[in-house]
Structures are given as structure tokens and as C-alpha cells.
Length: 575
Image (cartoon, rainbow, N blue to C red; front, side, top):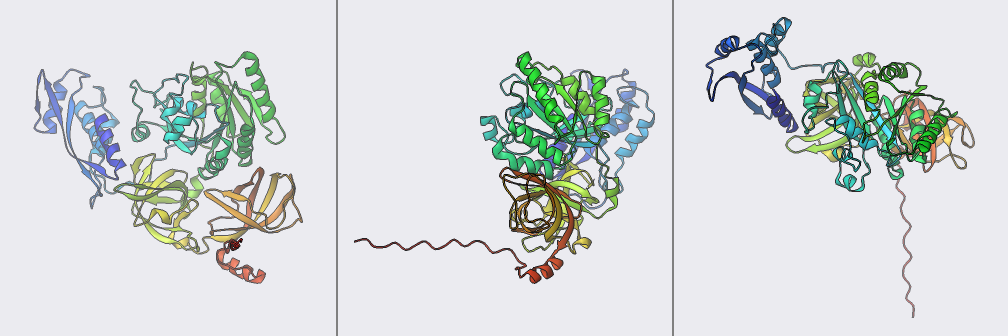
């Protein structure tokens, strides 16, 4: 079964699929082995074998680059599971009951491809905190094989995505890592071998999945961190604080962004094994003071047992985000990790996506990449509807606000090929006949019947200025983060002459470079230097409406003209 699963994973990475041509049992006869003529003979031999004895399966598997026409055969793992259950009358020599019917059904070819990914709980947790606080090390320990860190970066090297991150020891991009749980809350990632489990195998063997979004902690990568907090749609924020470093400026910055996005927050204090007792006590006091501040208004609670951790996990999503559990752990000695794992296993999905399943398809694109042999692929969040393989959607908007019909070739959920994804699930989609340079972050895939008024240059929003050094006036140009959209916008109008820290106002924005797909009610964060603010879209002026408004204000409706540099003065001849 493990070999067939590995073959499926390798084929999926190439955009292919596996079809089992035949599967027969091999009967052990000392040093010699012979192939059974059919499955019936193998089953008879298995019945005569002692209870609990295991026999091997020889399978002939065909790897296809394109799905064959007609019915989709069962996967290799399903065929093996059905054959194993059929031969033994159950699992591991036990008596069979309903497993026989499930195995026989899995062995039969399906009437049609799966149209809906099973509703597996997928909770996304953003990992924020100051640089060198131990975020990547903690993610590596939680999602690894169960081994602890050696104190010199062995755990974080397994989660870094780029060579320069390994060299510097600092995360510079948003990376995703999966942690699977069994129905009893045990971590599926932790296995006896030292080889990390693949995502496809992990998803198949898990009852629920938790996805970590490892964010950058350095100040120079703050815009990347903000993009991860807005575009990746996390449901919780894990704020990591080094016990020996305490609360630093970027810790406060990340906390302020998470509070502005209304994310439930829990704090993990790392490196407690090397922090002196007085420094650790001071760090805990500073964290409690920061969480209780008027800007955060959280209730910090120290968690010291697994039972208390499970109770806090149930209450953190129902307490309006005010509860803030605090954990003390060590990635080297393992102190407190069991309590944290129990808390993570008990975290419930915070967003109810059931109402969005019946809405038209909407997929937020946050990244585009190319896979050799497959072509252009996009990744993102399915925010509404259901996307199936072979469906045709509209991709856009481009630089002039148009949408292009595209066909979905294949779908991967957590690097596992599936037939469909539904609202609330992250996925990677392979697109047919699309160039990567035609895609940018912030684009969407929507139903072709709902492209009318699909994008806008301008919108009205209620904003709150969290901090600004002086005053904000008309023509001010901050960078807006609206979901996957990250673009500078200009202030056209506002109901105040000037805005200062703490002021609220109704402001009309206009994107500077491209029209974007935005909707009423969407929340966003904007920044410019140390200036920070948040807002909520109250009205969207779609392109047709914006043309009329622009003509009334004598503003060109197309892209704003680029600033032309002044000509250089001609050199003068000096005698």
C-alpha cells in the first residue's frame, strides 16, 4: 500500500494519474514464491493461512498523462485496500463486517469522476512574530517526523523554501506546511522513520488537517507578511515570542495587523530552556501587558495542561477573539509541546463556508507558477462555489479590466489530485493554454456568467487611521491589501479636510495601475512607511460607473499616465 501511494504521489507531481491494470496476491513458500493464477486462488490461500498472516500483492500499474475517456477507475490505494479486505475478510485477519461492502464498492470502477472533495476540516494558522523568535523551528518540529531541534537549526532547515534562507536562517517568503491529526487527536506526521511523510499520504491518512503559514519576521519583509495575513485567509494567528528576547517592535506590528484583521490570537513563548527565570518572568508580564492594552483588548490565559488546552481551543473561536492562550515551550527539550499539540488538534474551523457553497464560483489567485510537462498553474483560496476538473471559468481582470475564458485541466488539494474543490479550501489549479506572464496576484477565477461589472477602478470605504506621523490629505497614496490584491491607490475624496491618528472617515480610493476585483463589505489594511490603517468597502464603482464619474471630474478613465522624467540638461562646452 505504501508503494502504491508513493507511486500515486510521484505521478501526481507530473500531472499524471495511476490506473491499476491488475492486482494479484503472492503466496509465500519459503524461499520460493509463485504467482497466483487469479484473485480467487489467492483468497483461498489466504483463508488457509494462519490468522493475522500477511501476504504480498503484485500490482501492474499504468501511468497516464491524460485521463482516459469514460469512467474513472479506482485509485491504486483503493484497489489494494479492497483486494486486501477481500482476501482476509477484514483488516489484519479480523472478522469483516461493513468493510467488505466498502472494499467491494471501492474495487468497482466509479460511474463518474468525483465531483466534490470530502469535507475534511482544514484550519489555516498564520505564524507571526519577530525575527529569530523561532517560528520556522517550531513549525519544523510540529510538522516533522517527531524529532526535536538540535539547537543549531536542524528543524528549520527542513521547512525553508530557498537556499538563501538556509544560509541566513531567516524566512523571506510565505511557506505552507501541513500537520495531520487522527480522530483521537494524535499527530499523523510523527512516524517511526526519519523520512518525512508526503502531503498526499498525509492527507489520505488524516481525519483533519491544519496548515501553517510560516511568515517572515524581518522588517524588510513586512509587506510579504501582510500579504500572507490577507491573501492566505488564515483563521487563527500564532504569535511566537522568544523568551530570551521579549516583546520587540515587529512583535507589536504583527499583533496590530492580526487585531486589525480580527483574527483570534494565541501566543507561544519559545526558548524557555535557555532563558533565565527572571527574564522569562519579565517576558510573560510584558506579553500580558501588551495583550491587555486598549488596542488589543485580549484576555491572556496561561495554559498548563492538555485538558485546559482543549478547553481553550473550544472557547477561542466563540469568545469574539478576546481569549488569548499563552503557551511556554522548548523546541530542543520538548517542554510544553504536548500541550500545544493538543490545543492545535482541538482547534475548530472558525469560518462557516456552507452558505458560500451555493454561490457562483470565485477563486482568489495569490500565486502563479509553471510545472514542467503541465504548464501554467495558479494557487489560492476557493472563496465561493465549487470548481471541478474540465470546467471553464473567467480569469481576470487584466490591465484594461477584461476577463479571459480558461479551462481547468487538473486540481490539487494539499498536493493531492482531486476532482473538485469547494468554498473554504485552498487549491492549485492547472490552466489550459495560459501564459504565466498573463497572471498576477490579485486576479480571480469566476463564473463566466457573472463577469459583468466584475472589476473596478474606484471604491468608497470607511477607514480608521491607526497611526500617521502628520496628516493625510487628498491625493495621498498608500498601498492597499484587500485579500490577494496589493496595489497603491490614491485618495480622491474624503469627508474630512485632513485625517490624523485615530480619525475615522469615508474615503474614495482609485487604484493606480490596474482595475481590481473587489466587493462591498471587504476588509482591507493599508500602509505607507510606518503609517497604518484599516477599512471596510462600502460601495464599489464598477468600470461603467467609473467612466461616468471620471468624465464628470475630467479624469482619464484608462490607466493613469506615467510620470515622464524631465530631460537632462545638455552638456556645455567649457573652453
